[in-house]
Length: 314
Image 1 (spheres, helix red, strand yellow):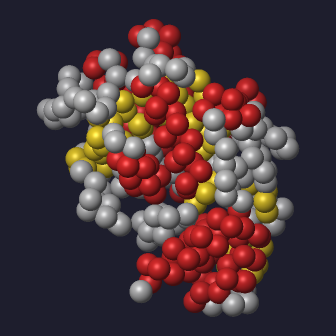
Image 2 (cartoon, rainbow, N blue to C red):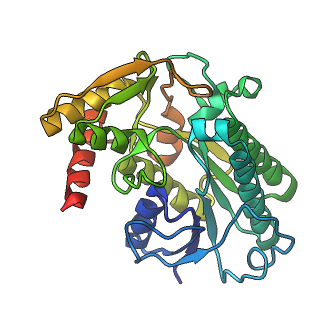
């Protein structure tokens, strides 16, 4: 019998790509999300607000019965750093979503994969950042605080209740299924649309260097962890998932100008409050334990992304 996997946030970019990957590998997949998927109706989704207060975790949250679940992959979150600075209650929602899903796992003896972020490292200005470098007292934003608190619950539940986990710290994931910018303004599809339309672009942080991750590489890392946590080959570890090299944000605009044949109207402003300005991931641990080998350099990934955006316009 195939393993049945629950993905929270299945209507998002990573959730949609991951669901298709796991289904292709023979897993049974269903999801929970409070919104409809923008791109497909193929993925079975329970529409539920995971940030609500629940008192019953038997078989599901509240009065719902999720059926047999072998693994939870918790991706659901409010993820825009500057928006959570403006609306910090969305960070509280992140905390409640994570608590609810970890408590569900405790009550039903289910392992969990948790999506964290490179934001937990703060703006520490190291050239290459490994998993031990998280310095929680330098938290930059309510968003990073919400993810740090989620990690704290994850680790404590593992110690107190023996819940197996894998924690992934993502970094600027982009590519297929990320262009629903009316719902969530992501910088890469936003730049593509503005350059295509001849609209001005503001880059917040002229010297900002980030580690951009093409979505297929991110999904490959998660998918490997799924296989390994279900067999208990790898448990209770935290991994950076990124490409492992840094690029200026300006590179995104430069590649799209070339792909579209349009000269962009660029301006620069200081980085916004709460944003990290320099991050490059040490991915050696993911390579060692997961066989993680990212394949897509930023320029190649941006070209793939541009081609996919163009395909959605016809």
